[in-house]
Every structure is written in structure tokens, then in C-alpha cells.
Length: 369
Image (tube, rainbow, N blue to C red):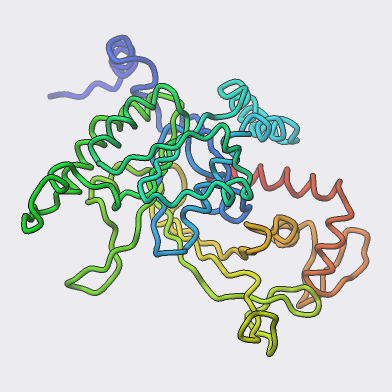
């Protein structure tokens, strides 16, 4: 068949009439997907601004690797997404202002959230310490996989953000009803495939976001790590983040976190309790931005999260506001301070500089999704 490029406009018009606008368009004509930001600046940098709205995301990792904590922090930010949108509207970069306007318009009262408490591990006090408004968070206490799927599909009309914790703990009906000696190959994966087939398009059409929390499994043949839930979960997820619990950290006399453990502490054994740990986050896959980006985040136990001031300090020299030479930092006024602790003190005292750094970070998210 002879190809006639002059017919492109005619075909585009016919396709849009039949199937709707933007079904076919130039690859250069795209609209940035709205995001729910993480609590961590570094997490937002590697993900292009946070969890994408209108898509599925997957948090994958071992036990105590930060998956649930980051999901709860995302819920807290989703509930106040309209406030974050207003902050973005105050940014000096026009595209970021427009994205902030979209967030405020789409979610004038924040996002309504549902937490699927499949593992029965939800802790209200911990969630509130992370900033979650538990009076606005709905819990789904159901373990049967088919029921979880039906509730998810129905809930897409009422809730914006759905956090399923966790995928591998949901048990199919046949597995519960069967004899203990029964064995059905990949039953969990097959049922999840049906659940996702039913709900996938509805998430893409609406203002929903789904976070699938998934535990690491050991591959019995290779000995390596693999994901549960089958390949379908990987296919449906637009973003997969691998979390790992890294080294424990301790505050030294200068108030800086270091991996060196103090000789004495005040716990029962006389040793020192760790004050924080390094959380390794790796974007394994992303259909909404750049994959294979990594972050190493200092997660403080007492603060129930990242030290935002420390991340602003790191961003200040990473983005070029502050010059760095060894352990010395050259401030905008020409003075020098030694150590990240002193730089944090300076940034904490300069509200204007904090605003400049944050605006530049917003611009970076937009230009480097």
C-alpha cells in the first residue's frame, strides 16, 4: 500500500472523533503528569517529583526497608496536596506555577485516601506522627484477594489515593477454601492479573493513584531477589522503586550523623542506640520519567522521617547556590563555614535562601522528570 503523509491530519481527525482527543498526537505534544510529592527532596529528584497521579506505582523491598513509611508520608502529602499546589503557584518558574494551579483545581480540599490494611500492621499513632490525618484516612481490613479487588474497583469512584499493603499478603478465595495439601500453581499471580485487568483502565482515566507495596521474595533457583504478585503487577506499574535498609547512623558531638558507633550509650546493655539509618532508594522502572536513578537518604528515627533542613543544605551546593570545597562551604555573602552542620544553621536562619532553593528544586523536577 502506498503511504501518503498528507493524509495524517485527516486520519487524526477521524481517530479523535471516534475515540476522543489526544488518543493520537505528536510525541512532542505531551502534558506533564501531576505528582504527589514525597517527604524527601532526594526522593522527588529521582522520581521527577513524586508518585504519579493517574498511574500505578510499586514500592518493593525487604522487611523494614521504608516502604510503608514512605507510603504513609505520601498519604500525608496527598491529604494536603492543595497546600503544596499553592506553594508551587508561588514559584518563579511559570510551568511549575501552572502545575500548582492544576493541583489546586483538581483537589481543592486535598485527596481522599484509602489504606488496604491487608497485613493488619497499621499503627495509628505512628501514622499520625508521620503527618497523616487519620480522621480522613479510611482503612480496608480485608485479606481475601478477590474482595480487595472488588473494593478497589468500587473505591476508585470515591478515593483518590489507594495504598495496598501488601500485595503478597492478600490470599485468594480458593487458597483459603482448599485443603492444606492443595497446591495451585501461581494462584496469587493469576488472581492479581484479573484484579488489575478490571481496574487498570479506570485508574488511567480518573484522578486516582495506586501504590502497590510488595515484599522481596527469594528466587529458589537463582538465590536472587524477585517480586511477588507475578509479572502483571510489574507491567501495570508505571514506576517501581526498590527500597533497601542501609547502614545505621549515630550523631557525633557536632550533631552530624556518622556510621561510627559511640563506645557508650544509655540503653539496657550500655551500648548506643542508632539515631538514623541510610535508606537506599532505586527507581528500577519509570514510564513517567527517567529510570535507574538512585538516592541515599538519611532517615532519622526520632523525627519519623528525613531531616528536610539537611536535604535543603545538600541541595544548596548541588544546585549551585553554595560553593563547596572539601568540608568548607562558601556562603552567598562570601563567608566560609566548615561542615554540613554549620551550613544547615546558616540556611535555617535565611528564609529567603530557603525559598530560592525550594523554587529551584521545583524547577528541576519539572525539567528532569
